Each structure stands twice: as structure tokens, then as C-alpha cells.
Image (cartoon, rainbow, N blue to C red; front, side):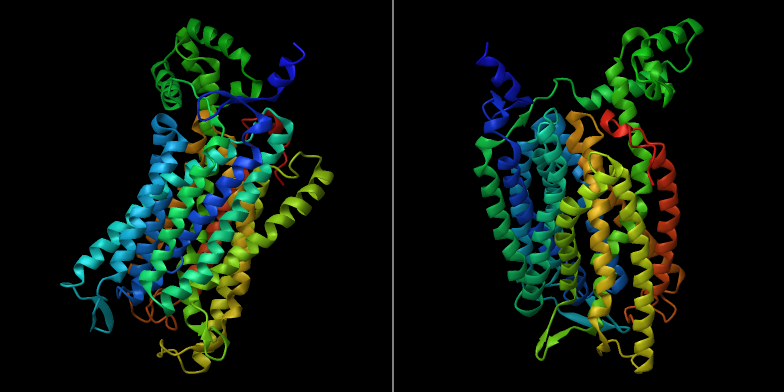
Length: 562
């Protein structure tokens, strides 16, 4: 008994090894396994940002698309890449499991990147000038265009399976029933994002330079090789991983049945209502009162109390998800219009060397990489001492701070754009889009840095929130829901661009998104986003203050958001 007790205490909760055997915390999971995941994420983000960071430049310069069309295509692809994780997470949580989904997604990733490299290596697209606009000349280049978009969306499909599962699988390596590992898991999300940004920052610096100065084929080929390395690294850690034990019954079936049963029992008789309320007495008082219509699913014992609790937990996420879309729209601008702004400015570092406009995104990642250790090692301990909360501030407080910073970011971006337009006018460059404006690109640095710091608060906060607040079996779906915020945000950004482009007169001088950015009005667009974000942020505060955390340890702090 004295030998078995320590082993039982050391046994990881609801986890087995790769052979299906119970595992001990001391020789499995934890940081030893999570480090493999972080390494894989660094490589995968390097590959992903190697494509996305400079995509708008490829579409405008190589495929001859207009600025507005290219921005719409980039937003659509980014949106799809962020929504497909919902499908990937469903497949992982219901059928394949996270481990096998990651392997399959990685193989599709490598295929997509390989085809993308092939498309860039085909004969360059010849362009013709038609009404002052460059357009793709079909014929010999049609195969390249088709292959390019097929491979691009293959990458989106692959990311749909890879992105939610690798992070959820990494967080699964920490046992929430163990106080030490529970705290380590919260720190994991910070260092996860640190690794993510390390990979993306290297990609924006190196790959964008290779693409614009050496070869687009090489610029797409390097991410393909890195993704092969990522798959090998993931397989290397197989023996150390903890694999979650899930129930046979699908969580989607359980939760769906609660809603269906509640609807069927919506016209309950008085006697049935009494039975329902008696069954609900086991629920905490706040959960009994919230979404009370779902309590009807307890009639006739079709659904259990825990199943109703799960359904309510999922439903509580909806207002937070919706009110996070304002931030997501702002987030979408960093890879589109921010880059196009930078392309018009003086990017000379020293005589003869000019940095690519896309490499400015490096400063977002740099701000994140520098601020995450400050947040984790300085901000959290100080906040913990002041608030007495275990994590310094609640997850919703963290998200809200980032949203506020994103509003400030748009205001700053608008003011800098006003200065850029004024400088172009002063030097008589309004009708000369190909001439560099005598204004340093470093003027854009504040909006990039603010965007990076906002990500540390909001993006990392959303990751932890949607992982933590869903049922255990739905954690891949929880992270997919977080990613879908940015998918829908990209689509909304694309929709806004389309509507504004239509209303403001296409490519004329009154267009906000004219190909000649010296005649455009990105400053108006940024002011609009600042206003929309402020309104949505106010709505977020309303819902966040009344949110009831799914884990009791957070409910003590949820009443005081600000």
C-alpha cells in the first residue's frame, strides 16, 4: 500500500501513453512533451507566414491584381484558413483524435507547399496594361494561376487540421488536477505564442527578402522543407506524449441532444416543471437561473445534469465570440493595407539595401516576443500581488485590455496615414505612385508595435479562454472557435472593403482603396475601424461582466472585469 499510494498520486488524470497504458506525471507529458509541440508550431508558423506575409505583393506584382482585389483575395484566403479549423477540430474530436489528425494535416500541408513552389517556378505571368490597370493575360499562364490557388487552398485545408489540434494536444500534456501543472498550463499559452511569433518573425524577415530579391519559387520552397522538418520533430516525441481518454459518446451528440430535448419539452405541464426544477437543484444557483430553458432537457431523465451544464457552457461563449469580431477586423489589416502603406515609404536601411514592405510585420512579432516574458514574469506576479487572483487578471480582463489597445492602434494608424498623404501632397507625388515618398518607413512602427502588444493580451487570452471554457472532449473545437473569430473577421474585412470600394467609386480619386495609395483614403478606413471597434468593445464589456466561468476557480473574479 505504501508503494502504490505515491504511484496513484503521480498518475496523470484521464491520460494514457501511445500504447494505451496509464502514465505517470513524472515520466510523461509536461514541459518535456510541450516543447516538442512548441517546436512544431515554430516551424509551422514559419511555413504559414512565409506565404501569408507577402501574399498581397505576389498578387499585385506577379498576378497583376488591383490593390482592392488583392486585399479581398488575401482576406478570403485568411478567412477560410481560420474557419476550416472548425472542420478539422470536429474530425479530430469525433473520429481521428488529435495525434493522427496532426500527422494527416502535416502531409497535406507539405503537398500544398510543394505545389505552390511548382506554380511559382512556372513561366512568369505576362501582364498587359488595360485602362491603366495590370491584368493577368490568360493562355500559357492560366495553368500557373489555377495551380497557385489550388495549392494555396490546400495549405488552408491543412492548417484547418493542424492549427487547433497541435495547440490542444500541447495543452493536454498538463494535468489540470495537479496544482503545479495547472499553473504551468497557463504559462504554456504564453510561451506557445512566444514560439509562434518567433517562427513568424523569422519568416517575415527572411522569406519576404528571398521572394522579392531572389526567387518566389525559392521563397515558397523553403517553407515546404521546414514543414517536413516539423513533421519529423512531432513524430520524434511520440513516446513522451499523453493521450487524453475520451468518452465513447460524442460530445457533439450529448450537447446537441440537450438543445433538441429542451425544444421538444418547451410546452411542459406544471407537474413536469416541478420535476425539472427538482432535478436542477444539483446545479449551482447561477447555472440554474442562466439559460433556464435548457433545464427542460432534464425532464424524463433523457439528459443528465452534467450534459445540461456542458450545453450552457458552450452557449455562454457566443456573446464573447461575437464581440471579439471587432478586434479580428483590425487584426486583418496588418497583412494587407499596413504592408501596402509601407511599400510607398522610404525603406532604405543603408545605401543599396532596402527592406521588403512585408518584413515590417517582423516588428509585430518582435513586440510579442519581447513583451511575453515581461507579461509572464513581471506583469502577472505584480498583478497577482495586487488582485490576489491566481493568474493576476482574469482571462476576460486580458482579452479586453488587448481590444482597447487595438482601438488605439487604429487611431494611431489613421494619424500616420494622414501624415503620409500630406507628405505626398507637399512633394507633388499625388499622381506619381511609383515614386517613393520621402518619409521614413519607421513612422509605421508605432502601429505595428501596438498591434503586437494587443495580440499578447487578446489573442493569447482568447486561446486560453476557448480552450478552458469548453467541455474537455471539445478542446480542439474550442481552439477552432477561437481561430474562427479571425476567419470571420477576415471575411468581414473583405466585405467592408468590397462595399466601400463600390460606394466610393472604384479606382477613381474618391476611392478609399485606389491602386495609387497617394490618392486613396486609408485614413478614413482606419477611423471607421476605430469607431466600430470602440462600439463592439463596449458591448464586450457588457457581456464579459456577466460571464460565469465554467471553472469554479475563476468565478470568484468574474464579477469585477475592470
